[in-house]
Length: 200
Image (cartoon, rainbow, N blue to C red; front, side):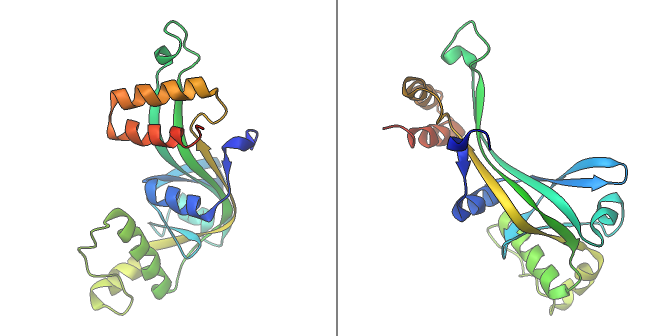
């Protein structure tokens, strides 16, 4: 990463972004060229899990295992240029947390592992858990576990990025915190707190 002050390599950060990012992007090298696919996903047991069809280009590309990339992003507030330079566009920016993964992807055949992956996805997107936990032993899930494709991205390496103006002057960061708290949306307040972490 070019700006090392933005880099993060902490497993807690990976888990945080994986929980908070509702959509991830799977990067594939297909026979027709590169492709990035938007997916719902979950992190569990040190891997990324998603589900999909057991047919089509995406499936064919990873059917026997394939190197892939995967990115996930938690978006925070947009910062208008007018806050610091009323007539100049350049200071506009956007803050975020992101993770870029390199690894390998393959379909999962074991129904017990398929159930584990799907359960992790359900726990992420339906955290109230008002459903019967997914298990390969339950008759109500046997048909679904057979028909649905479940895929696992084994993480070989990853890089985190936390962009909240750490590389900008303290005076500007304090201005952003003030303006964000004044604007006052829930996301703005969360962004202000993140920026404030880097202030003396």
